[in-house]
Image (cartoon, rainbow, N blue to C red; front, side, top):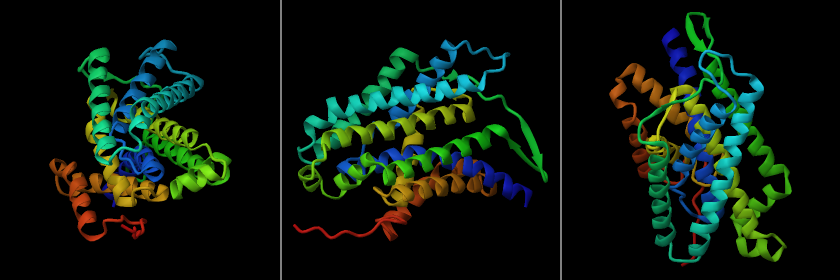
Length: 301
């Protein structure tokens, strides 16, 4: 039972990071119908923005890092990633928005490769240690070993997800996002600036990805320009599992993927940790392609 709860805590922690990244995929798809494959590299860039911000604030491995500075690192990374997301949308996706569906998809893959190689060029391919902006403390609860870092990752992720839910359903911009996702033409006729709404969607999704990058760096202690490849794929699977375009579904999908990884690693073998994600993807595509919370929509042709 102790082992079960150990894996449960670790699964919730990693799953919440997947959920944050998956939200970016699902928000952009919900508004534009586009799979933004560059989103995984925005996650990576956000992690590096946090790394250099922490170093700029005077981080020293043997010196406690103030909580205020840790919050500054998180906010700076989120703002930098939001700016990057808006830039990508404006320069890469907007010119091909009305092109055949294959064109934006290829563009997204191209932007992803561009960002990844820019990361290698400017940061080097060698993994860098991520600053421990939250000092680690170990707790023993009923025989279960829990670190405060895992709890911080889960707590911050949940807070950001709840904040997103409030923003989407309680603010004018959130309502405009929902209107645009249902019918962009009708939203435009009702006075919604669709371009601004789409830009806001990219900014918000990218900011959440950057927060995921900071939390991932805290958990794994290193970052690299290739870190977004596998993590981005898993987050995309989480979005598909929950129902691409469905915000609560992305959260549930991320948590399910995190738990599946941890329990597979603990009870079967760590060699199957990555494989279980794609087994879940295949199962979803075969038996419920609309995802757990998705709905089947009929389109006239």
